[in-house]
Length: 426
Image (cartoon, rainbow, N blue to C red; front, side, top):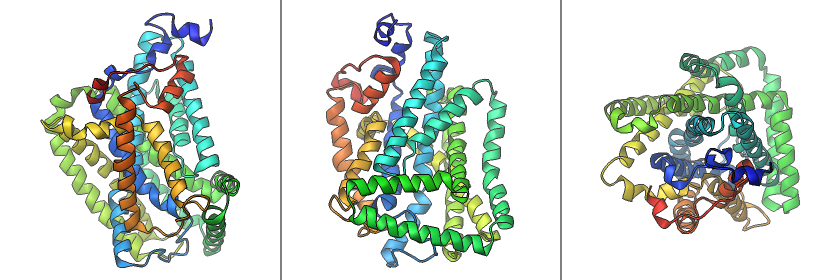
């Protein structure tokens, strides 16, 4: 039987598992929209200048306004919104996988694996052909880990893994103190400075071909150099931490129990904010006062503060948006964000294309000319003036975003249909 025949074989077929708009959880779409906005803000520095800048501890943007914007951005946004997305990815994985197993238990593992492999391939193409800051391949790898490693693990095991992830920065930091010598630090600074120079040449003044070649070099370094691979592994652990929280939320059906859980949500929200701000102020102060490259005991504490701030602020944002979404004005106020959140893959990749056109040398050539303060303003302008109106316009005519429809079609073998405009407010 062909994929197209399987798609037409009846409501119990696996093809029916591509989630229609009428069955979506509206609050989760709102959260995805907020995450997209935050991701664009935190990704703006890597879109507009080299990710290897400041390797020697110097400030790339010494102005007072830019430094204040950078510190506030790092404390309030850095790592929080891709963590929110990974949390939503884990929750969505749990809900969708359970739904698929109800309809076609025999074929669900293979179908979901195909879905994740397609996402990994798309992420790899995104990283090499467009932008090395891609996170899609990370989500795909972690999804495969969840598919084969967490399916039979109980909730207690998930909680233990969350605890181990929270301890990772302490273990990694102490290990760095033992292994990283001044000579290794100097070597890594020199490598970063060489990459900064080649980034500036390829991205700031080069052609499309130069950009692709440089992307391939950066990705090979990220996964081929043992010290960079250590950093990449830590990035995966950070994403795994919040993905596990999402898996736990999905297993316990928290998204469907929001009205019942509202008293606990209120209390936890304020505790998460207090811990997040305290730890955020801690890591901001520690790393600002200790900018010299190389490990140190105080930086181990700074790393712990960063991880706890990242998790706490992510939880705060999720709970705050959930409360607003379930308030009397929530549906009208947040409907535009929900529209953007119904097209997360399309809008995420659109952010890359728009920013490449703005910053790369073959585009408008603003590489290295937009500091942190202007970067935050530009990110908000792109999101609210371009992406939200585009999402509203598209979804008034289609059931899902163009790339979401392709991904569903490639996975389940069924093209996407159209939806009535009323689907926007669900």
